[in-house]
Length: 138
View: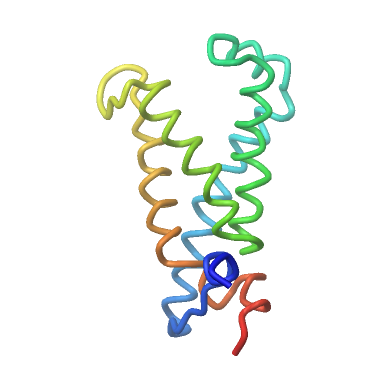
């Protein structure tokens, strides 16, 4: 029961709030999907650039988070479950890959922005306009 409540929270959001959550989901997860798609279509280069932190294994995990989980966020399918790898991915990108720098060369400003938005979206839930809303008992 607790897992079901976590995965499919009942939301009492108004139509406006649900539409704004949908806008955030589509905008941010959609932009993240472009990064994942670029990594997926150039897998060899991606694996090479991740050589220091795990090579092809790290590349697969990043692509899974940035493309496939982002697709789940956009559609609202297993929304909170999809957010977990994305939040971990953005945490590693910001704190490890970019050294938690918000300014200067090679800063992690974009990773930090994604991280903050996806953490907020974890707390809000997917809203009414999500595939998950079909699984909520009314």
